[in-house]
Amino acid sequence: TEAKSSLNGVGVVKLMGRQSGFIAMNASLANGDVDVCLIPEVDFAMEGSSGVAQHIKNLLALQGHAVVVLAEGAGQEYVTSSGGTDKGGNPILGDIGKWFVKRLKAEMSCDVKYIDPTYMVRGITANAHDSTYCTGLGENGVRGSFAGYTCISIGMVNTHAVFLPIPRLIERERLVDPDGRMWHRLLTST
Image (cartoon, rainbow, N blue to C red):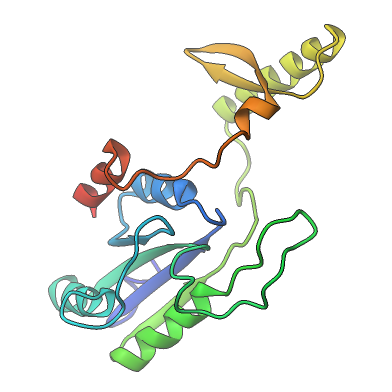
């Protein structure tokens, strides 16, 4: 709506995810209006005939607007970070969103609307499905505690609530596979 409401409107949304683009990729697939999704697992060029800026110019000429989703860890080679780590031990990332908006405005005549929801979980009330799902997760978390389990997370696998050992969940970093099915679904939809 923000992008469509102005002449040559570009809506830029930065989503959380640190060094992984799962949230940005899945949000882009779920939305259906996203034209460009940039994630840390896939390098991109900003300038040049095959760069993101040129692609956005082409979108503006073709449809009059564009929607861009940025994963917070995307394009870190373009921005400077303060270095170091935060209290959780995660690397402190540079702000790709502000840099990206500044570059877009320098490259073309467009009205950029930048949205950085940071770590807001939801902007609306949970629906009935969400409430039922969360109740089930909570109830099974209590069952796991009563059974004496520690270091577990609760998840749904094939419609069944299961106990998932946290050490197993975090033993390796999960990244978007640029050759995988989900990423190719996103490329097709954008």
